[in-house]
Image 1: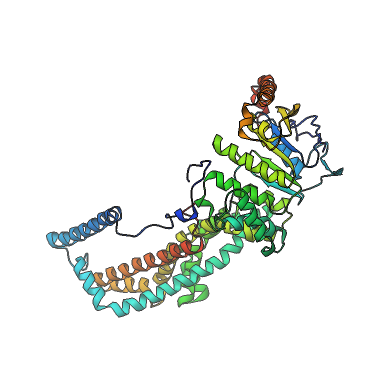
Image 2 (image 1 turned 135 degrees about the vertical axis):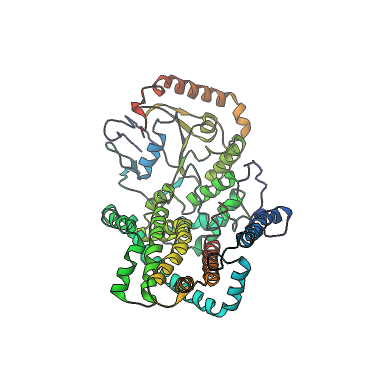
Amino acid sequence: MAIPSPADTARPGRAEAAGPSWSGTGADLGRWIAPVVSFVLILALWQATVLIFRLPRFVLPPPLEVLTALGNNFPILLRDTWVTGRETLAGFFLSIVVAVPLAILITASAPLRNGIYPFLLLGQSVPKQAIAPLLLLWIGYGEFPRVILAFLTAFFPIVVNTAIGLQMTPPEMQDLGRLLSASRRRVFFKVTFPCAMPYFFAGLKVAISLAVIGAVIGEFIGGDTGLGQRILVASGNQRTDLAFAAILMLSLLGIVLFTLVALAEKLLCPWYDKS
Amino acid sequence: MVYRSRGKGSVTALDALNLRIDEGEFVTLVGPSGCGKSTVLKLVSGLLAATSGQVRIHGEPVRGPRREMGFVFQTPVLLPWRTVRDNVLLPIEMLGQPVREHVARADELLAKVGLDGFQKAHSWELSGGMQQRVGICRALIHDPEILLMDEPFAALDAMTRETIGLELLRIWEERRKTVLFVTHSIPEAVLLADRVVVMSPRPGRIASVIPIDLPRPRTVEMEYDERFKEAALEIRALIDRGGPAMHAPAAAAGGR
């Protein structure tokens, strides 16, 4: 924030801070060099370890072989990724659809909060892996139980963060709403909800990573598609290189999905990192 | 306006507070922290109900929040996703009135506080002083009869304070509203007011009401006027006399 001066010479146009600059300045380059160097070092170390200790391939394949496996099986892996990604996203969106109204209910009144919140905590304390076999029993094989598992793992952080955000309305704004006898609905849409957006997105960022985990757990337990299943089968066949390739795809999927959520945040609340 | 009120439970926030404010008068309320200045504003606005006593506007008791109040908060609290203009128009939207008809008025108000050209800027592009100017415009957009200001310039530096204070007076002189202005600053209280209400703490009561006999429009130079100094000194003495009470046991904490 600029130092207030009587003249207040600042002009609207001075907002050069309109987002992180990706121009190739020296400082930016420096930020990229370190992680790239350490990444290359880790790969070199991995390759060297395998060569020096003569580790069997099924225990730890050298990174180059993982890349070869990735290249040779790329169409299959891509299809698996698509399956896992689809389950993840379905579970993720389902969790948004359920979590946001729930967060609104929780913050709307004390009795509702007291009635709902303990059960949310209770539900959260149950490890999702533990109920995965039961889900198969109840809803059978296929993608649907995995979607449900992704939903169950993802939804809690969205509820909690959104609920916190909905309570972040500045008291002055509540006073303003009361002074002007604005309806609760109007204050909610004009002030309360937008105020909660950054918290909602913080929840989404945690949730999207958890949703991937949920989907993979679902694939471990049952079915015959998806990256989780591919990892399971590949390691069963001692195709560790293929398993690693699938893990690589899985982490790429996670990174891409997370980046998409972060992008959506930038688009929908561009004010957040500036104020 | 008359208010006589007590706080809940054991802490009496305000006691034997009796004040009449004329229409179009500019009254400042000065006193040490914890003397209930802000409580008085909340009572007048109807945001807070007095446990005893009442506030009357045009003889009619205040029973709840009222639309004819404009409120300027201690911090501007602008909504960061809205442009400056849309922040000013927020009360119109909350009232459910057509926004388009008020755009011209919003721009006019912004121009009056020197923010012409900033209509489409966002709060993070503004300095603290500019943000509070937007806060003033927001309080005035629905043309309230009464303007309540709760230490609006407390977070600003001394020079910006003076400048904005005089801007506020200019707007007020064009269209006289009743202003109740809470402040910590004695010079500010004197420079702006027709009358300064000096409050003493715990329980908050009126120590004295001091009429300010300075011509309008006011200027910064008046701070060197003998009448200004006299009034400021008198207020200073009144507040210092209430001093020991400020160091009373911690039981009185939170007496608002």
